[in-house]
Figure (tube, rainbow, N blue to C red):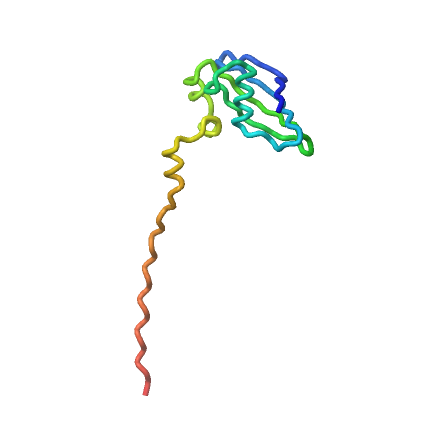
Length: 123
């Protein structure tokens, strides 16, 4: 897996650097978000807690993927700016939250209808 950086753009208002990159992954499927994040963080020499991958799109029929990522100056700023689903996607959910979601919810039992009374027979 090789990562090449296509562009870097400084966004001073949001205190981040916006990056577009290309991943070449010959004879294998698309690498996981965690693998790409770790390699990209090592390439940029930044902490993984400050790097957030927004999207990864694989080209049809090719062993290449394009993506965008944001590198923040602090992890606190990242939590303020990034949507919650992007933070969850990049940092993962705590184990306690996963266990809560894994528990099936109990369905309320329906009350059975009373059986109709027998009608008197006509003589």
